[in-house]
View (tube, rainbow, N blue to C red):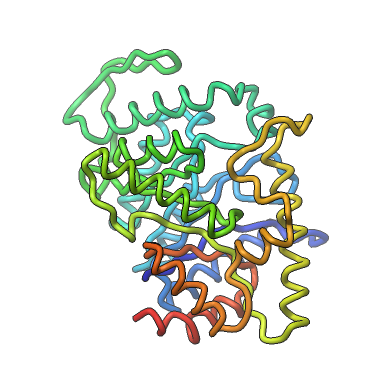
Length: 330
């Protein structure tokens, strides 16, 4: 089993230079994660949240490429419907070059309605925009010499991608997916798969079953390292610490769920957790003592999970995980 970290910098509220302080702390945490033996670090992209979240993930990862030497660096995810795909392909290839081939390209359609509204892009167009963008990016990375593209949303004439990515034919592709049709698309189109941190294990295992069946239908073999399952991490030694962690997680879920729903509450993303927030907090997180966390991970491993991405703002929990949990998995 391999372990990575998942998340991003946030500004520190109430501090004069809160963005700098928050980004510095995040950068230091990734550098330490490499020293602790974590395999990868995946960075989110969000806009307009008011929470100081990372908006320019490829920029920040380029800086991290200079501060690290072995940890893989990835996006989780670049939301393609908002971006010019050729510019993304160039920036991602540059990052792959600077990191000496350590870049993982995670992409998605997006799920936050306020972000689409802010960009004045209808969320109903997310799938068609995503699929055309991926066609352009794959073409840019695999075409020798110049190419042209004339689609519904994007037009390019006689262009050449510079630089080429180090990893050939291109960096590994990861897709964030939850709905059956998206899981099937990931299998058919040769993506690795992200499964989100908000769902209970029963939901995760069902999505994994759908993906594996679609892989078989597509003639691909299942690779346990080709599915990254994100989980919150909260090391708690006492019942009081555990209850405090559960309460904190429930508050976080309430905020995250609000981002994944329409204003009228009638439409919601597959990212929205179980309506029972306590159930979602307890079952969707690696929570408790190191022994309890090992037991939960063994259950996941038995179901075919081989790659877990940990989300935690508590650096001490990551240190204890590296010291007390990771050795149990070789």
